[in-house]
Amino acid sequence: MKKRWLLTAVALIARLTETMIKSKGMEDLSDVKDLTIPGEKQKVSDVLMPGFDGTLATEPYGDGKTYMMPMFYAPTGLFYNKALLKANGWTEPKTFTELMALGDKAKAKGIALFTYPTTGYMDSFTYSLLADIGGKKFFNQAMAYDHDAWAGKDGTQYFNLAGNLVKQSDKTTVSNANNENFRKNQQLILDNKALFMPNGTWVTGEMKDAPRAKGFEWGFMAVPGVTADTQYAYTYFEQIWVPKQAKNKDLAKKFIAFMYSDKATKDFLKGGAVQPIKDVTKQLDAEQKQFYGIYDNGAKVLTGSFQNAKAVEGVNMTDTLFGEITSVTNGTKSISQ
Image: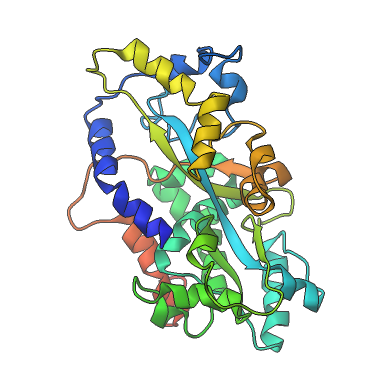
């Protein structure tokens, strides 16, 4: 499972990054965006894809200063079988109303509307849906643990939409939503037993040797919005930063600027990593272009997650928020609970 492998591989680095954020030990990199890329005439700000800066993922203190620059990214959304939709004359839903209506049609054919590998995969789905409902301002409030954001009208709408969706999950989803059997839930999409699944670009690699329905073709879309006008696609991305106590900070900043050069971009692509620079999708194959080009097709970029905060013993926001989804899926808890 590539996502889990990545999370494991960067766990120590992530802890170091978190420690540096908490100790305010990072150098201000706001001026990097104004640097000319070594060997080129453009500045970093000229090539950086819109939406990847100015977020909690790059400005952890919310003070308008950049301490982490965005590196290679991995968009998330809902994966499905294009051939299944085409064979039934169904179109990709743009709104939640259309999504749930499609669920009724699928149910009549014995197909579940939804599944998820594990509840942890509801994170990016949740972030996108929050922004769909209330915009980035509401999303940032929710990520800052704002009580009124979660308990208010928009927060309640999120719980109702997400809750009613997971109720339409395949009956085997809960039993297989664990580290050992998550691929069985992903297999539901390949077997035409479920329509949609939240995931990231790594899923096609994980399932490349898995059996699949005749004519199967990966489809990928942003999370349906409350209206058809706005859809967000949350993306994971790596960050690069400089310790405040570094001896060669100016040289480090020039190196970061080089990371957005044509040469660095091509080298990253050889290793399967995609930089968040404009027109990068022109260098990708057809399948990759479908995934990484989601922002070229109208979806808005969304990054960042829960704001850095003082730890509270026994409290883990993400475990509570996503871990309890199973209880709604199997009916042991109501949405309001």
